[in-house]
Amino acid sequence: MTGAPMDDNWIRRLNTLQLIVAGVIIMAPVVWMALSSFKPSFEVTAYPPTLLFSPTAENYAQLFKTTPFFSYGVNSLIVTLGSAGLGLLFGIPAAFAVSWTRISWPAILTLAARMAPGTLFLLPWYVMFRQVGMIGSYTALILSHAVITLPIVIWVLLPSFDNIPRSVFEAAQVDGCSVTRILWRIALPLVGSGIAVAAILAFVFSWNYFLFALVLSNGDSKTLIAAAFNFVGEGSTQWGVLMAAATLIALPPLVLAALVQRWLVSGLTLGAVKG
Amino acid sequence: MSGTADTLTPDRQRLELGALSAPAVLFTVGMIAFPLLYTIWLSFQSFSSTGRQSFAGLANYTRLVGDNEFWHGLWVTLALYVLSLVLQLVFGVWLALVLFHAKRLPGVVRSLFISPFMMPPVVAGMMWLVILDPSLGAANYILTSFGLPPSDWLASPSWVIPTVALIDTWQWTPYVALIVLGGLQSLPPSVYEAAQIDGASGFKTFQRITLPLLLPTIVTATILRSVDLLRFFDIIYITTQGGPGNASNTLNIYGFRVGFEFFNIGYASALMLTLTAIVFGVVLAFNRLRGAVAW
Image (cartoon, rainbow over all chains, first blue to last red; front, top):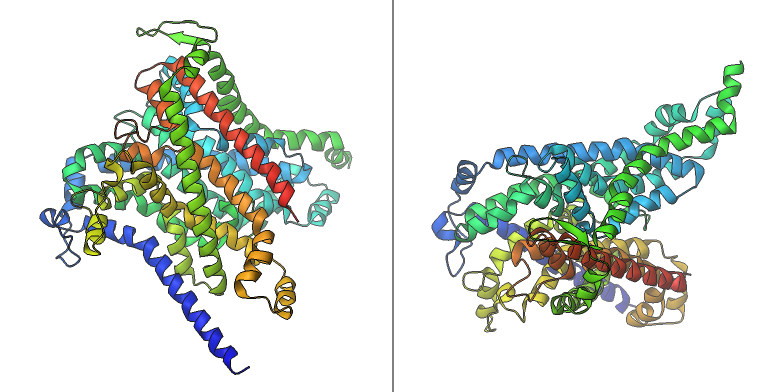
């Protein structure tokens, strides 16, 4: 029996060691990307690669000077906020109705959009938007990205609405509240954290989405993600600038996700796991 | 109080509930269902180089059967799918067990572990493009300093698929791990107590008890990853655009290029409908399996 606590200790140490190994593998590339973005241009392609260097912001300065990075960023924000907003506007009442009636086909319908390859929709959208001269418009981009945000909002909020005891609604009904009134006055305040998670996940996945903007945006409405493709082509010799762009593009979703990490897990699996 | 009575009628209530889900349903029909029907119609059309379209019957589908590039794309898609999925499931279950035994996870650690799949896949592609550069990249420096031969990674036709699979595995293993961790945390502690009384070893407990009980969760993770992996696009498009040559030309990349680089919308529609059928087929099959392994 005396050996047992020591065994336990060893197992715990071994586990911590594995945790550290996993952490290093996960974080090293990200750290390397951020470090490279602060390296002077002659050092970023140095071989062997250097870990110690005097950091500089010249890559960032050059990025903003040689590319319309700022206006791409504004485009990304407009499309992301617009599509997340549209997803919430349509998704909140739909999730509530599905939770109330237990009729789930509207939720499953939006999920089908999450499963099909984006190119499948992009082909007819391209033909249709071109006919009405909407290629390159914010409207076309926001509508297409709302296809990504709507199922996220609905499936993140469904379990939150399901968790509200039915008796709360029944009491309100006895008092003569309409369904819509129950949603706005009673249900919404109770699912505040669910809405925060839904909004942030909608933002992150809309911000990260590549394919639609690649075809539906033009020079004026290009989003950061779509522009990243051009950075790779132009930046083949300027790794520092390329890594500065990559770091800045990754920053908004990473910061937002870190804010709500505790509640993200069940949302990320579209309700498949109650975390 | 007749107004109150009105609001309580079931008809009125049903109407209100319908109105609440109407915007989402109409939006989905307008953006998904109608365009899907339009794609089906487009797949029976042919487009000339001047943009004139005419009815082509099944020509796009017969062309697909005889198109070597389609079969190659299918092979690339499936190879990348199986390789990435196996890697992510194996490492994901391992990481989940490690995280589970760590008991308390500080928020910082959790943020750290979700950061790969919260960053845009496009950024992951840019990042690894620099790290895996054949001549100046850090990866080859590390390999050679351990006395291992360097690789051409994304620039090598034979290595590009495993390399892309590795990048995707780096990005999505933590996601699989979090799903499996959720499954682990919901297992009843009593099953372990029974195993302990029987004196089962750690590995045996995992093999005989934990793994079978985790199967439904693992199948869920498999479904969620299958949907993304079968339509692999972002990382490949940003790093290789399907190259070198056509070595990483997945069906989704091929269909995209046929549609938006060669503007053969009809044939691209046929390709994408075929890929969609494959995705839904795989999802339905795994969904059945999930029913079979449920407990």
